[in-house]
Structure formats: C-alpha cells, structure tokens
Amino acid sequence: MADAVAKQPRVPRPRTGGSTRRLPYLLIAPAGLLMLGFIAYPMLSVLYYSLQNYNVTKPWRNGFAGLDNFTRIFTDDPQFWDTLAFSGRWVVTEVLLQLVLGLALALLVNQTFIGRGIARALVFSPWAVSGVLTTTIWMLLYNPSTGISRYLADAGIGSYGTSVLSDPDTVFWAAVLAELWRGVPFFAILILADLQSIPKDLYEAASVDGAGRARQFFHITLPHLKDAIILSTLLRGVWEFNNVDLLYTLTGGGPAGQTTTLPLYVANTGIDGHDFGYAAALTTVAFVILLFCSILYLRLSKFGGDNK
Amino acid sequence: MTTALAEKGLAPAPAAAPDADRRGKRGRGLDDGVPRRQIYLPLALYLLFTLIPFYWMLLFALRPAGSTSLVPWPMTGEHFAKVWNERSFGTFFQNSMIVGVSSLVMTTVVALAGGYALARFDFRIKKGFMLALLASQFIPGALMLVPLFEIFKNLQMINSLGSVVIAETVFQLPLSMILISGFIRNVPVSLEEQAWVDGCGRFRAFCAVVLPLLRPGLIAVGSFAFVHSWNHFLFALMFLSSQDKQTIPVGLNTLIGADSVDLGALAAGGVIAAVPVVIVFAFIQKWLITGFSAGAVKG
Image (cartoon, rainbow over all chains, first blue to last red; front, side, top):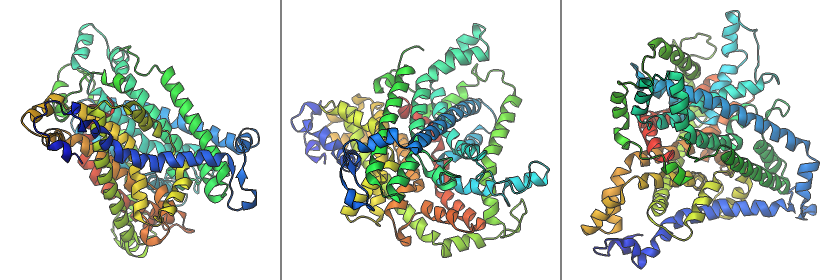
C-alpha cells in the first residue's frame, strides 16, 4: 500500500510530498470502509425502519408510519419505562460498586508485598472471562441442590433448596454479584496503570509536610486519577448498558421480566416478536438516551478540566 | 478528550515501568508504614471471592457425576470426554479459534494502518473521523443484530464464520485504533525522521523503527481482540445457524438452556472455554498494566 511512498528517496519530511497527501486517506480507508458498511449503514437502516411499520408477521400493515412508533414508545408502552428503569438501576449499581471495589483493589495491589505478582494475576483473572462463562460458573454456584447454598445449609446457614435466581427478591443482587465478579478487574487494571504514573516525590513531599495517608489519598491520588476514573466509568457504563450476554443467559430477563434491560427488550421485540419497525424506534431512542447521558456526564464531571 | 488526556504528561517508558516502580516503592510511597496485616487480610478475602467460583467449576468438571465431595478426588475425565465428543465442543473449539485468530489479525492490521494515520498526519476529515470512532462506542452491538443479519444475508455470509469475524473486527476497531494511535504518538517522530534521512521510505522506517517499539501496545490490542471475539456470544448466536459452525459460548448457552442441565458437562465446557483466555491473560497481564498507562488512559 505504501510502496509508492517507500520508493521516494531521501525525503526529510515526506508528508509534504504530493503523493503523501493521499497517504492518510489510504491508511484509514480499510477501517473507514468497514465502519461505513457495518456500523453506519446498519445505523441508518435502523433510523429508516424506525419510521416504518415493518413486521414480518403482519406484512399488510407495512409502510410509512411517521412518528407513530415513537409516540407509542412514550405514551403507550409501560414495558419501555420498566426496562429503561431497570437498565438505569443496573448500570448505576454495577458501575458504582465496580469502581469502589476496583479502586480499593488497585490501591491494595499497588503496595509492596511478597507475592504481589501472583496476587495481581489472580485477582485480575476474571477480566478475561466472558458473560456466558460467568453465567456457567455462577449457575453452578447458585444451583439450589448442589450449589453453595446446600453446603451453607449443611453448616447451618440459610435453608436447603434456596434458589436465588428464581426468587424476585434476590435475583437482582444475585446477578449483580456475578457481574461484579468479572467487572471489578477492569477498573482495578485501569486504575493501577494510572497509579503508576503518579510521581513518587509528591508523596515524599507530602509526608515530609506531615500529611497522613488519608490526606495523601484525597489530595494526591484521587485528583490524579480523576480523568482515568471519569473515562473508565463512562466506558463501563455504556458497556454495562449495552451488554446483554450475562443477563440473557443467567436470568433470561426473568423471573417475570424483573431483569429485562432495554437492549434485551429491544432484542426480544425485534427478533422474537418480528416487530422490526418498533424495535428500530426503540434502538434509536436508546442510542439518543445513551449519547445524551454520556455528554451530560462528561460536562458535569468536568472531564479534562485542570484541577490537579 | 485526546489532548486533555495527553496533557497528563509523559508516562514512564512502557517496558521499564514495573521494575522501576518496584524499586521506587521501597522509599516513601503510599505504602509507607502500612502494616502487612492490612494488606494480606483484605487481599485474602478478595482472593476467596475471585477463586472460589473458579474452584467450583473445576470441582464439578473433575469429580464424578453424583458426587458431593468438596475435593475433586477421585478425579475423572468423563465430563470432558463427553462434552468434547458428544456435545461437539471439539468442533466449537476449532471454530472459536478460527474466529479469534482471524479477528486478532484483521483488527491489528487495520487498526495499525488507521492509527498511524491518526497519529502522524493532519488531514481534513481527521476530526470527524475521530468523532465517529468515539461515537461508535455508544452504539449497542446487540441492537444492530437485525440490520447486520440482513446485510450478511444479502452478502450470503449467514452461517459462515466470516460474518462473525467481520462483525467482531468492526466493533473492536474504533477502540483499537484510538489505543494504537496513542502508542504511536508516544514514539518520537524524530526517530522516524532519522531513518528517512538515512534513506528509508516511510514504510521501511515504520517497520524498522516504530514497529518494534509498539510491541507492548500491539500485544495489548491483539489480545483484547482475541479475548473479545473468543468470548462474544450474540453475533455467533445470530449469524451461525448450523451446529458445525457454532462457537464455544453458543455451545455453553445450549448446555445452560438444556431441560435438565448436566452440571458436570456444563462445568467441563466452561473449563474448555476458559483455558485459552486464561493462557492469553497470564501471558499479557503485565503488559496490560503498562500498556494501559502508556496508551489507553492518555488516549
């Protein structure tokens, strides 16, 4: 691809050359074309279908629908609001708990102690585990007859036959715990990486001035980590909103729709319900909500603001 | 966002970071005067939380069906044999490998080209392109299933592994490209210019000077791509219909959803799913931390 450029002899700054003006476009072309074809085009088709009645099972109604789908979402679909509320609750709970535990874990394994290398590798390992594998593992743990609860009951804690996944009171926290297990390492890894870029002499100066560990944490560590924390919580929040693997396989959105997130609802509407027009409208709304919340979050948290 | 992050200043040279850190910490650091008990006790608790689930899976995979023992002894390979042969995990494993390695190669090569352009050139659509990369992070892959399905149907790629490879690559690309351009920006341009003066073209200079220095970053990005597509579930579930084309996560889901779940087989399938990513992880976990401090957080 770059052969034409490579032939040019002795160019101190090749970027001013005539043919190199096209080089950056050539370089981003593969990525750009892939994204146009498989992200932008499907996105546009979602927008188009959101204005249509398009249901494979009711072809006689197919056609232009105007804003009907959107009106239906906001005025006549309690399930939209339920699943949106659950998504919000799920994202906030997960991101907050993952951040707090991840930060604590990063500070912990940033200390010097014997066995640190192996300890880091072990506590970070669930990072690489998939949603389906997490479900596999926690299904084994939560199994009412052979899971942890049976052995706890043997030891006199709780009762036999406890099924946390089919009880509406416990299913939320059971799912939260499973997702925490694999989600905390993400934050721990990112924060640990950023901790290592804090100049050590800042701490030395602080302790010479008599600042205790708590004050060092709040005046040096936390301000330094601010941008990394904002960025990682944002990325994770979007990811937790969009990712359906774990809930789809662990609870299937149940019991009784209790753990159905908005994307799961959209998938059910579009794939099982064949109501693609309406699913497309839901997708559009979800995307706008997500984008709006993200921008708001970046603004409110003053990301990139220089207050170190 | 990028510039704001870049203002954070130069991170330590990637490869040197962990060792320098270890020695530096001996002085007065955050850990100054922390009693060992305050480290080992919470660490032990967290290790239990991390490891018991893994142990539980191994236990079920290794002990005979019907056993309630808490140690996997006597050990049996029956569950593995069953899952690998009768439940076609052998085939699934092969398919997952093909998908994982192909996405790794495609993502890394395409992202490297694009990342280089973003790091080293100013061109007219650069700002817009960066914005598109960032905005694409907000698009729910799960919500694109139906339109993507239609596209692959038109391309006659339904039920071919290629559809999954393309879908995984496309959704991995934006972040990978941002990461790689961050890594490339960390390599001083002057090194490249030196090579140009010595008579190298841009491509040769890149291969000889920049590429070797990108190793930690490429390892990080490549392993993300592999782990991500090895783990990903929905695309494979939707685009691959026949059993001989399915991947490990889809196979696991079939075991999970069976009417009477065979826990031994499920656990053995889980172990098979875990082995490759655990190996990759063990190999990269040190690079992961330094890789992030050099590229990701600074954008």
